[in-house]
Length: 78
Image (cartoon, rainbow, N blue to C red; front, side, top):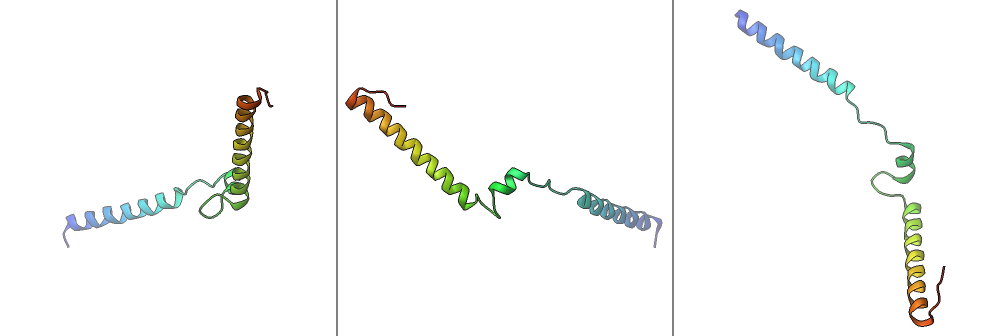
């Protein structure tokens, strides 16, 4: 073996160690408490989806009532 090969093997070995050390230290951040409460494994939890759907329906009903109340009856609804 020549001296050149020994130096190159040493460099390769050390770079592998550095990559392994970097992989050990670079972990993804833990999700926050809010994220864990809102999301399951891959999507929004069912209870939150149902709540959001209900809020959208309530907002649409309120807007419809407000618009039709003003157009047909001339009243302001709160």
